[in-house]
Structure formats: C-alpha cells, structure tokens
Length: 628
Ligand code: ADP
Ligand code: MG
Ligand code: ZN
Image (tube, rainbow, N blue to C red):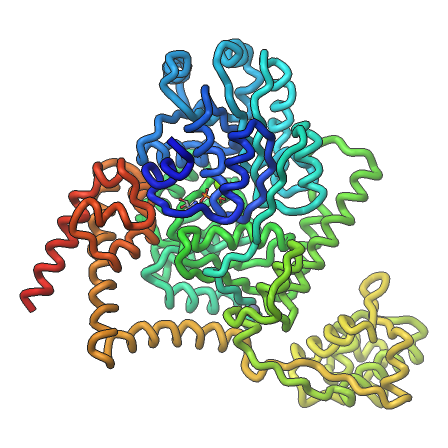
C-alpha cells in the first residue's frame, strides 16, 4: 500500500492538502518532523497515514481525553484499529488495551502524557516496537504558549526510557517563533523537517462589531442563525451563565461549558452539542481544544480574547469541514479593561523568577495590544491575521466586515483642535493633567460634580462639543491617541504630544476614516444578502435553481439519514460523514457504490458500512423527481 492508497481507501480523499505529503514522506524516510498548520488544516492525517505504513505501533500524545476519544472513534469508523489510554478507562480496560497492544492489534494508540511516567506503562511500552511518537498539540510543551501543560515535559524522560528512539513528529497550530523553538529544543527533535503551511482559511469570513448593547446584538445574531450550530465564547464563567440563560429564555437551544461545572455536566453538555442535540454552546476558552466537531457554522466572541493567536484558534473551530462559516467578534472598551485585569491578576503556572515573570507580563500585554488593534482596525481583518502569522496576502479579502464596509476619510481637524485646547486649558488651570473621562465631560458641557468642583465649567472650551454624543467624543480622543497626538500617561491621565502643536498652530490637517455604515449594519446586511441570495437562487432561471433546490432538499435528507445512523451507533453525526461530504454527495447524487466512492470523504470501509442507507436515500429521491 502507498500513502495515496490509504488516503483514498480509508479516508476517501483524492488529494493531499498543503504540507501533508512532505511531512508524511519525511516520517516514512525516518526523519523527525515539526508540522505547523492551522486548525482544520489536516494535521491528524500527517501521523495517521505513516502510522499505517510503518512497521510497529505509533503512539500519539494528546492533551485531552475528549480529543483522544474523538480521534479513535473517527479512526475506527474508517476501519483503522486504534485505542486510547487515559484516566477515563478502568484498570481492567487498560489491561485489555495493553494485551491487545502486545498482540499487535493496533497501529495507533493515543496516550495521555500523565500515563508516560507510570512504571507499569513504561515496562509495557519497552517491550513493544514503537515506530513513531507523534506529539499532537505540541505547543502544550511551551510555557510561552496559551496552553502550557507541565505533563508534556514528561515526554522527554519517557523517551530516554525506551530501548530505541522512535521517529518524533510534533504538530501544532501555533506559529509563534518562541513556541516553535521551544518545541524543537525541549523535544530534542533531530534535524527535523519543519513545514509551515499557509494560515489562511478561505471559507471563514471575519467580522468585528462594536454594538451599543452586546446582549441584544448577540440575540439577534443567534436568532438569525437559528438552524445552525455555533459556539459563543465569553471571557468569564459568570458571563457564560448570563449569556446562556438569556439565550434559553428566548427559546434558543443553548448549553454551557466552563471550569466551574462538574465533570459530569461538562461531559453531558459537550456531548449534547457534538451530537447536534443542542445548537449553541456558550463557553469559556476551557471549551474547544478537544473538540473536532466539524460542522460548527459560526463562532461568536462575546468578549475579546487575550491574543490574536487565541482568537484565531478559537474562531478557527468554525467551518472545519471546509464549508463557509462566520467568525464574529463583539467588541467594546469594557473588554480592554477586563483583559487588562486578567493579565494583572493572572497566576503563573510554574515557578518563575521575577525577571521571567516580568517578561511574561510584557509579552502578554504585547499580545493584548495586537488583539485590540485587530478590533479597531479599518484594514482587511484577514490581512491583519495573516500579518500576525507572517504570511503574505492580498490587500483586501473582499469578505471580512472591513472589506465590506466603505470608509470615507473625514476631516476632523476642527474637532482635534477643540480637544487639544481643552486638554491644554485644563492643564493651565489646574497645573496637572486629568483623565480622558473628565476631558470628554468638559467638552460635552457636563454638569458632573467633578467638573464643577474643579471649576472646569469656566473654561472657554467647556461645552464646545455639546451637540455630540459622549461615545463619539471618546472615539475621537481614542483616535487621536492612536495617531500619537495624545498619550495616556501615569494614572491614565491624558497628555498632549508635541505633534499636537502642528495641528493647533501650524495648520496640519487630521483625517479619520469613518464608516459609511456601522459595522453591525454591514454584518446584518451581509447575512441578509446571503439569505436572500439563497432564496433567490430558488426562484428565477428554471434549470439552475431547480438544480440548487434539488441539491438542498437531498442534502437535508442525507443529513436525516446520518442522524439516524449516528443515534443508532451512539456516535456524533460528523463521525459518520462530515457536512462537506454530505454536500458533495447531494451534488454528485451517486446511485452505485462506485459512484459513492468518488464522493470526497467516502472511503471503502464507510462505503461498505453506511453506503446502502445513503444510496437508498439518493435513489428514492431520484425516483420522486422523475415522477414529478
Ligand atoms: P487539525 O488537526 O489540523 O485541526 P484535522 O486533522 O482534524 O485538522 O482535519 C480537519 C478536517 O480536514 C477533517 O475533517 C479531515 O478529515 C479533513 N482532511 C484532512 N486532510 C484532508 C485532505 N487531504 N482532503 C480532504 N479533507 C481532509
Ligand atoms: Mg488536530
Ligand atoms: Zn478583508
């Protein structure tokens, strides 16, 4: 068998994706590898295929029980004998797996890193021919990353205990140079082939919305996507509770996940979501790494995450099957405050020296600032993400909320002058600088106690911007800070930089890009447009739209068939076939096993196991059509 045969026969795919082939070839040639691909890029195949071709067993270290369970389930479904060893098994079950390993029944065994230091396990593994050790989610070994797991460090001791060093293969979606170097150094990869694939996920569309009220906005976003599966990420447990309750009150099928729940409830809620019994999962970032659910149609961030890296990983859980999916971030300034507090109060996971602690803090703030830039930028959002990963891209992707918004440059020189003179007048009067809020209040002509107590109502700039909304004045001030005319100093006081003098006295112009529509309008419109495009497809032009509606109807039927099988076999629907596979099937309308095998994602085992049910549904459907 060749790698191509395995790709086709077991997994049902015709071509390798970027990076897969090179990584597989290197492993087969006995070389260590480090594979860096985005979430959904197809890292699993990079070790699963060589595992099938190498003599002996491949051990896969994986950080989460749910992840192992999912992968083993998927392997078994395509006919590859696999197992896992972790704390979810009873001692009897573990010894059964061990016996089977000794009998050579498995090609692939997933193992929790904690298990690697159990004496009996080491003794057993020493007696087995271990061809390769694959480290999935390898960034967990680096404490610079988001998901450091001390137990991953046990991998090194374990390797030293083996009579023969296996091929080492590490995979991650984390592209940061520091993390990459950590993986190579800590795992002691030997002359590894390092493959970094493109980070773009063309089927994802990105939006940032700054809504007036998040709860209301969220509800309307979710309601507009009612029949779809989505994840809503919140930054705290209490936000998860609040959001989940309010969605449920509105009759939305939502469940929740965070570290404060019992193990049992977490498991139940996760299963309900994975099996499509619940449409929406509201969760903290504790949810997701172990989730391979491929038919998530949207990910909404109710709060801004702590870094672009974290954002892309979480948002990337949408559309893993390659079908179009949405990543929406709800942003307001409160998020910046929350994030700052989280960093200030974060406890470090291992003992660090004072200097290292400081370094980590600086790093976290740097990441946070990049994240904030993403939320505020008027540039292409996909472009900002790809910049972060150091990848070239075209100037505009055409599909993100910024590319879909027209910005006009508005001259704000007069407003800028008003703001600068106000800052200056306050300083002249008081002899010290005050905070942003007080400057805004003064410009607005507010009668707040502090304004009056300091006598600011006597200034000539008092009430100069009376006709403006408070939020608009704030936005102007923020923009002037961003452009470097103003700066926020100690105790958050607002000061003027020398550049402001050019605007005040030397006629320099300031312009600010303004949206012709608010971003939320755009997202709403985008969504509406998609909906109407879909329904429009069904009406005019007889041939084209008939084709589309027939495909849509068949797709729904195939999904129903899948749901029946999944329920019967007690597995999540996507383990049977992904949405992308059912979509391809609905388009190709296979009526024989040979035709079925041409559908992407249908391998010989699945064709044999489930083919009859799906073929029957297609044939029935075709017969009905002929009768019409
Ligand atoms: P990652 O671990 O990189 O996040 P996975 O290994 O879970 O990604 O793969 C994501 C999805 O892509 C899976 O549904 C998988 O079956 C599919 N996939 C992987 N390789 C290919 C390929 N060569 N052709 C088509 N689909 C693929
Ligand atoms: Mg993976
Ligand atoms: Zn764009």
